[in-house]
Image (cartoon, rainbow, N blue to C red; front, side, top):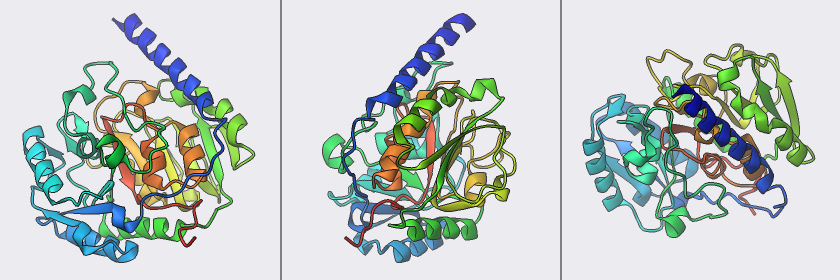
Length: 346
């Protein structure tokens, strides 16, 4: 059985590596499609923090009142699939047809049975997106797509959470996203190759990513278990259960950072580092799985796709969501409208 699992994962890594070459000939510009009219904010009326964050986000991003969806449900880390399906029906019933994206204004729940809540809200709860031991899960129809209207094109609304350890952290994350818009930052993409062999599987694509995009953005491949004292972090991709020295680095507004590990998406009470540590350190978005993914790189963001799409002008939620081939177990947290490489004033 272990030999079979190893073979499946090896084939998956080859496919992941092949993806690093598929888009490098595409140089057309993209744009941040997540304008205030096209995103809905979902609020939990039973959660005072959710109400506060939703109000703050609406103010900062000028979200129309008709795009604020208020529902009520228990504040708990994990939600059952039946209750969630009923909740999602209520949300869809209140959603204007033109809405293409959702943002969840809460930190709990972050999980629906065996799926993350952002994937369950996007795709609907379905066990084909859940892993059974070390197995592939259903693919993301939005993966590496050029669609700017995912609901119109695919009948899905990609979803991201405004989550954090406290309200102050979440507001700082929102501010980072807003401040990043149209700044065209001269930051660096750090592709970190660690000594953690089991979690270092994305390093197979690093050289291809650097070769494809180093003329567009500074890219450094770093062999280390942690970055330290870097002042220009725009992307930070690594693989490790715990990442040290996060707060010695300076994350630029709009920065994306994540660590490939089993339970980074378990936001609270974690036995591995929660992705909220990245946001607490100054990143604007992060990603992690809520159930055991095994070492399938397709269940995590592809660094090349994120870097390519984000630096060509897509909004954060677009570039990040399009980079995960099998997203059912993965939680997306961050400020979805951030678009550092697109000037929304034009």
